[in-house]
Length: 76
Length: 157
Image (cartoon, rainbow over all chains, first blue to last red; front, side, top):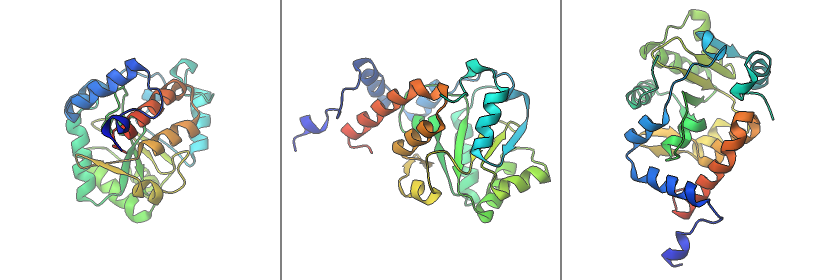
């Protein structure tokens, strides 16, 4: 199989995303990491130093009941 | 507390390695390790749910500077499905049973190693986000799927 075919994405990746993926691939991991991690305060979520849940279902339920909706933790 | 730094990710990798913890980076932090350009706040780690692994994880986490009570340590050793740590030098989510992934051993067999970091496959990262079904993941799923296609087109997955 020739490389031109191999290198084409299997489905249409939007050109702006493709450009971002390719730009990211050119950056060293340490730099990608620096760009990716941003700390912002999340109300309620960040107000306890430790939480644990027996099941993921309990965790999801807790998120839906306790977190502000705009944080996006509610289930679709 | 500031943003999670690469140096701290290296500290996790090294401490978990020293204690023989079986774990994988999952979620957006895992995708970022695979090259996905996006932003996130903290690291999610998928841990194998065994007593031995839980015990090793507690030792590593304490070594990293997290202040765990004995009760909290026991919960991690027991492998509660989800543990959120904000009592250390950075935030860390421990996931013992992520949505959308049947067994740790399956995910382990599909993992990638990136600079010594064990990372879930992009398929597993997508599967767990899809199964979680959260509003905040809805928008990122199509972009993650495009990233998977991009990786495949370059023979990177």
